Length: 251
Picture: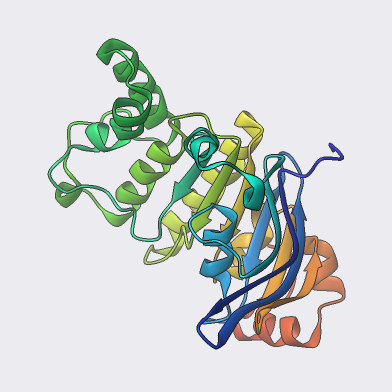
C-alpha cells in the first residue's frame, strides 16, 4: 500500500464544552482500505466520522485527509476536497419530494453543474451499481428501507469519491438486507479503489468485509486489528463485545 495514508489522525481530541468525547486518537487508513470503527453507543464513533469527513474540527491534534492537513487548508480549498469525499448518512437523508434519481443527481447538478444528459447517464450507472436500475422514478416514500439506503449509497458514490464514509449503514435493516449492504461496501470499495471508513454496531457484518477493525471506547481506540487478529487475540473489552453479539469465529 502507499506510504501516504488516505486518512490520518494524530493525537486528535474533540471536546464539547468540558466534555471530552475524543481523547487522543491515532489512526491511519491506507488507500483502498476498508476500516471499520465499532464500539458501544455513545463512545464517539459518529464524532470520529464527522471529524474525518470535515464536518467537525478537532479541539487539538492533526487530521490529514487525502494528503491535506485540515488545519492548514484554506477555506477556498475545502469545497474541492469535499468533492473527493462521499458520505452515507445513517438516515439516508434523501429529499422526500424528489425521486430516487433526482436525489442521486443532486451533487452533480448543484456542485458540478454538469449538462443534463451527462447527469442522467451517471445517475443511471450509479443506480444500476447498487441494484436499483429500474427504481429511479420512485419517491422515497414508495420504497423500502433497504432501497432507501441503496439510493443514498448511489448518491454517495456519484462523484467518484476517493474516500467514503458510512454512518451505521445497516441500521434499521433486516439481516438479509444488512448483508446486501455489506457486500456493496466491499464490492464498490474494490471496484473503485476507494478508501472506506465505516462506523457500525454490527460486528458480525464488519468481520465479513473489513480489512481492519478499530474498537473505540471512552474516546480511545482499545484495539486496531484485522478481523482474524481481533478474533484470535481480542482485548478484554472487545471480547465482551464479541460475546454480546454472539460472535465466536469468522463468519
